[in-house]
Length: 192
Ligand SMILES: CC(C)(COP(=O)(O)OP(=O)(O)OC[C@H]1O[C@@H](n2cnc3c(N)ncnc32)[C@H](O)[C@@H]1OP(=O)(O)O)[C@@H](O)C(=O)NCCC(=O)NCCS
Image 1: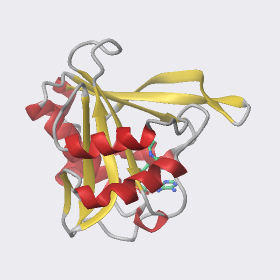
Image 2: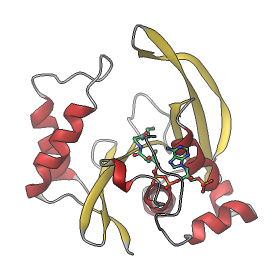
Image 3: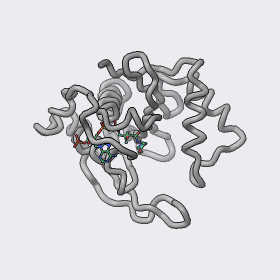
């Protein structure tokens, strides 16, 4: 099984757009310009452009999801990137694709994009994403209480990060995950 990160192809717009619509929420609404924004992201995918890098997650030639890194100049200090990921279909989750995709993206950010620190935040209850980060050696740095509006309330988020030094000297456990345990369906399944 070959998992790669690559630019999107123009004919993949519909898949990305459908996923974006499903992700719509009060904090991430579909605005009139949203379709055009996705179009632009697809055109620019594969390269860091205006502080944003978006890549397709490809498994044996099949598009299974998307991953991105953001370093908006006026929102984060230089060298700090924030990553986000989504595997589109439930059937593709829990098979190791997410861990491998984040590993490849972080490698690239440190090797080619000038990253000094890579961080990610996720809902405190998102066990799958937390495990992805922990397996790769991201360090839990704290809980962002009442961070994300959600269903009339606000969810706590957790913040994880790796520095360039962490990534250069992995712990034995994260080194095993980063060597890339073979992906397969034997892992825990179910909604993230
Ligand atoms: C979060 C996500 C990227 C994880 O990728 P994935 O390919 O499903 O995860 P992996 O198969 O690499 O599994 C990583 C770890 O999480 C665990 N895991 C996976 N799905 C799980 C679930 N539903 N519940 C609990 N643990 C889960 C795996 O068992 C594994 O841990 P282990 O090695 O200790 O057993 C993916 O599930 C996804 O796209 N979810 C929806 C979008 C999302 O939540 N994105 C993150 C927002 S910041």
